[in-house]
Image 1 (tube, rainbow, N blue to C red):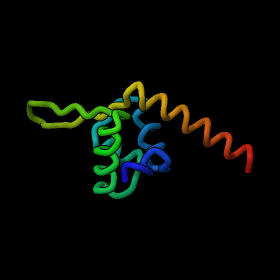
Image 2 (cartoon, rainbow, N blue to C red):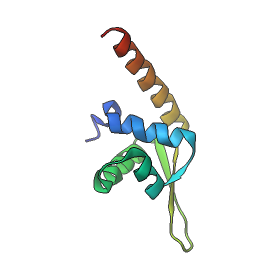
Image 3 (cartoon, helix red, strand yellow):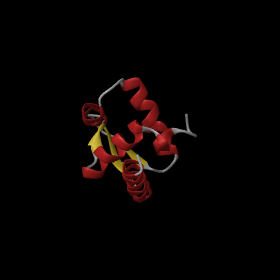
Image 4 (cartoon, one colour):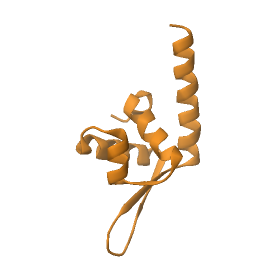
Amino acid sequence: MEENIIYNTKTVKILEALSREPKLFSELAKDVKGCNTTLKKYVKELEKLNLIEVHKERKFPYRKTIKITPLGINILHILKCAEALLKINS
């Protein structure tokens, strides 16, 4: 999945949602919509690529806050520019 994840629509939706504010996983799931299992895989892959960060709270309630990294913001900007170019040329 890692090779194609950057060019995926779901990646753009995740990065867009996180660019507005950090979110709990449940909030991100509402924004992005779709299967939670798939979203968990995307979150893991995007974290490996350093596009997002997952902060786990050490006390109850054990929540995970997900936020976009500076690299993730740059990638989102590039993907939005590429999307705009594709619309212009189609």
